[in-house]
Amino acid sequence: LQFQPQIDTQIEQEQNNEQKEQEQKNEQKEIEKEQHKSCENMLSFIQSSNLKNGVDFLLVTENQQTFFLKNNEWNNYNFGIFLLGENITLTLDCNRARKKVELGYLKIKTSHLWIGHSSSKIDCSLLGSPMNHGPGKGKNEHWSGGGGGYGTKGEGNGRQGGEMYGEETLLKGIYFGSGGGVQWRKWN
Figure 1: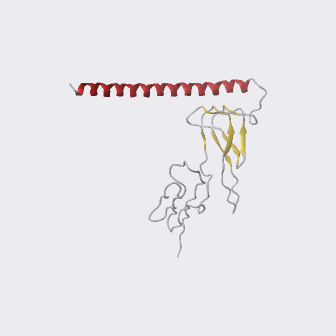
Figure 2: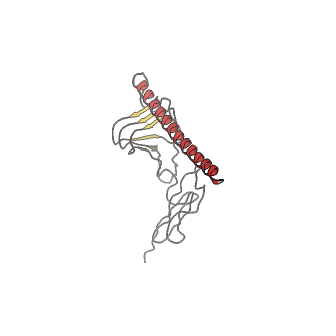
Figure 3: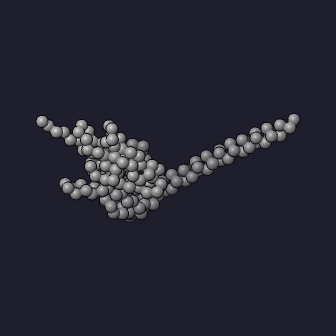
């Protein structure tokens, strides 16, 4: 009989925890609804205004488009970025002239960001250091160069992988990625 009140208390605590979790889930759903509604309201506003697409906002509804933003400069879209078509890619115009290493640095200021389809994306791949450059560059090897390191050591056969720099969680800072090593062959 002494255990009955403890069991009842544990059951009540579990029920309270479940109820709190459900309330948090419902709250999150409401926040997501409001955010979505907010993007819809902004989209209606810009479509009925004298604002200019590509200047005041960026609206892309056509499928399979790639848009290049300015590198290492602020791309200001005060009234939002709306990628509503399928397979849309937003990336940087990163000029990698021969013997010049230009890193890609995406800087966006916007009030709203709406990516309408899972096939659309903001793509920053291949914008870090080129091959054989960067603090975690892969090692040069006879048959294949090692992969660049970053938050973890780079991959490769033996000791080819680049060294770790930065940190795994990316909470303290984000650095440019390092390029992989170069393959070399010595022909007889």
